[in-house]
Image 1 (tube, rainbow, N blue to C red):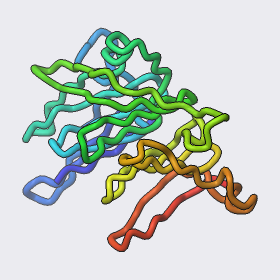
Image 2 (cartoon, one colour):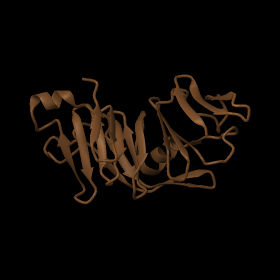
Image 3 (cartoon, rainbow, N blue to C red):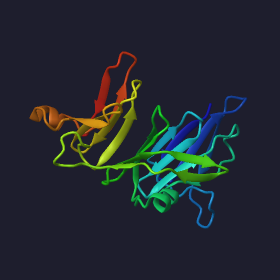
Length: 212
């Protein structure tokens, strides 16, 4: 199989050949070349159920690599301009990206909350369906904990976990609202959770990495 590594100088892919030697491929932004990376600083790498690979960057980028059996010849499609044009949503940078069990794309926009909705790829072009822009509402305890969202994680039950600067918000897809952890609980618990990484295991235990 292929290994994917996001760096500050582009995307690196490696795979062993038939002689068990590792071959490294390096992809980066090339000025004037539309099918190259939109930005060299790769922040997140996400593979969806159709084996398309999505890349985010802190510098206004959401790129996707359509699935191909041969991963040595890649072209990159740029989603950010399409989302901005079709939805009127400004994307300064993308911190994380996932696709949930219902096929909705969730995008954390640096300091500007979350957008979720449908993104389509057809004939090497992007199409964005009108979705929802979610932000913190100080008057609503069931809103997103904070607009700075570092991590989005979809667990096996379909719940969406959002690691923010001020706690972890869990979106209940049935109630269509958030349960904010670290906001209305003890001071110790609030300081302990900011949610830079979230993962659940096969027993439904949840592990949260914090920078505090």
